[in-house]
Length: 498
Ligand SMILES: Cc1cc2nc3c(=O)[nH]c(=O)nc-3n(C[C@H](O)[C@H](O)[C@H](O)COP(=O)(O)O)c2cc1C
Ligand SMILES: [Mn+2]
Image (cartoon, rainbow, N blue to C red; front, side, top):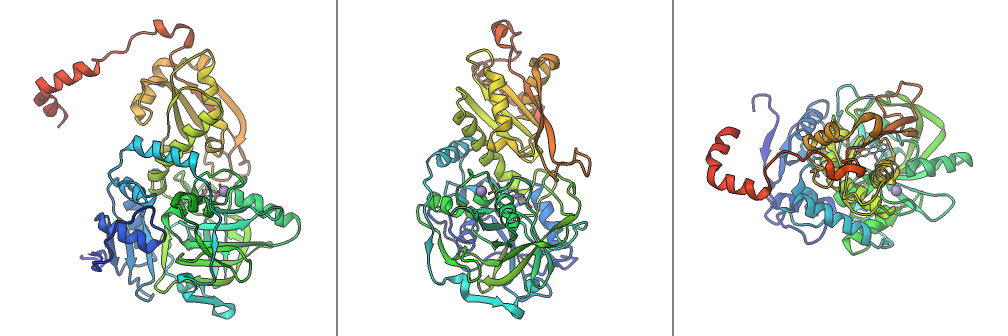
């Protein structure tokens, strides 16, 4: 190409074309599967300063973009690679969790809900070595700039090595080990920032160590199997070890070495792991970083510094990149299915009957605009569903709007949902507001310095229960009539829509 970048080549290793059975258990198995689907491009020679970030952003903003593996990044050895947009399309999400690549929307949601209900976490299996120990750096040998971390967006306050990552920590009061996706910015050769929002499991652990005056041991995986990244970035219940949960989904334990400095588990076939301690008394500025709301809302603040004591990496390591962008970006493209499944599950689990569907809309980052459909059974049923959806684990953090609709509305279709809002709800009667709910620094609607709480509105857009049978009938042919018209007059319809 004229600008000398974006040379597209395909993986030419014929063995790297195998669709695995079950979820791929490391990045390399996953690459083989994505390549077999024809959904992987290898691109060489793109700079980390500007163009990897820019290309990634633009890949995130269309439905059909492939996964891209950047190699031969100028200034870095060949083989030090970055994988982006791994989970940005349904077939690759399905591949990652061991489902058919041509799976439909509701089949996928149903299957994920079933998994969430049935998975029994499996303890990790400790091993003494694995691909991750091919290279171990300690002391002066540590240089985090060894990896080609991109400047993801021009306005970012630094290079973020941790975007599609998993941060492993342990509760000092119990045996609970957690893995959560929290952003990690490079400070220097052996220090990074680690930003965790209030209320996340990593902050709960951190605050307990800091209250005792101790640093928090942690391991940051910046190249991990997509199924592990999914678990790390989704709302898995409190007290559950996401690595054990992945073992349960996969059906065999995740094999882990033990970190030399922290004794924390590190998946033996991960690509890159940073092990060290987060310090209470050493803080440096973190941010700004492009966030999932589409803004730089948390700006920059002092955050505790993570001191890296050991770097472990495979030969020719692969960094997993998932930088947030204005919605919908890659994460929203998978979260819309998986968070919707969990929201429906949690509303049902709270005892709400006849929950037909739920959808966490990607336009709201799968948090700010959620919809629940019910078959109304009794007075108050709709409000019950709405309030639970706004406050259950899946809906609580940084929610804003919850809409409850009748079962005739397609929850995934914004037009239909908003049609129900504007025609079935009367604001004075049907809008409930919850005040002082769980928000945080990332909320763009709250004034800087006052962030922490927000409010949310529950919109009851169902037909009013008392007179639902007298509610004006909706216009439109029955599905059977529609089919007859399509059969006989389809040629006109095609013309009209082209
Ligand atoms: C790409 C990406 C980046 C994220 N970055 C952060 C972050 O910097 N801080 C944070 O608190 N949550 C972040 N999250 C959301 C958390 O990963 C998510 O809330 C997860 O449930 C946290 O794990 P936990 O429930 O074990 O705390 C991010 C999610 C994704 C997909
Ligand atoms: Mn957790």
